[in-house]
Image 1 (cartoon, one colour):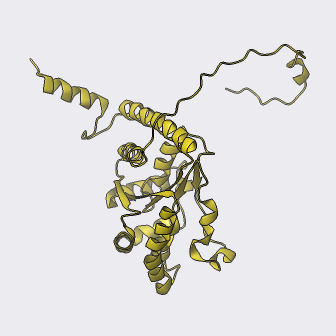
Image 2 (spheres, helix red, strand yellow):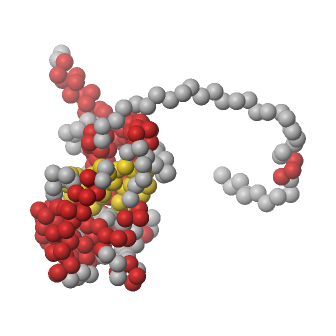
Image 3 (cartoon, rainbow, N blue to C red):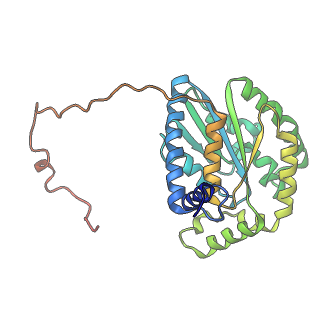
Length: 279
């Protein structure tokens, strides 16, 4: 007859709890929904307290940054959680201070800004692909902690995530992008060269962490070979580093439709162009 520990283990395995080899889709979706409900509470708290939050996502190409960001933002307001994914800088932006083009996107009170890649491009892709000089690179690593100290001292909560994907998993994801028409849009001009320069990126990552992992703006490393677990782990961690409480909301009563000025508002649409109902 199975004991209590055996029953507990079986229950965890059925739900796809942490430590299992495979997280079931049902278990993932259930836990994701629970965490997203907490993100909605966090959102109300951010607005209630006028907090300003920046979340930076960095990592190799194919590390799962986009999917993790979508999991965070799926159930919250895009007016509160804003995602910033800047294109390559224009000639005008190249003539500016390096950090200048990021500043207009910083949060106002009651906002969370998520950078899908950030000023750390200089420590990663720009360094590895030769888009900046050695002097520019070294200057960035020297000045970045000071800049982030200024940001944090100014009242912004800065959270930095590095998604760490393994060699085999990155290779698998790149091959899937090449073969699958629904994923080919994910292939960027930098993807294939970045695959060749694996160890150059590793060295750039190590230098970046050594120079910019500070007490006031630490890096949090997220293993992302398992996308589902990575998303859950990231959201759970995010909820843990921003203290929040449930904000009391007034009860809402849906009003009845007024019959004042009533008319047949469907008849007035006759003869207009409607989309064919194929489904």
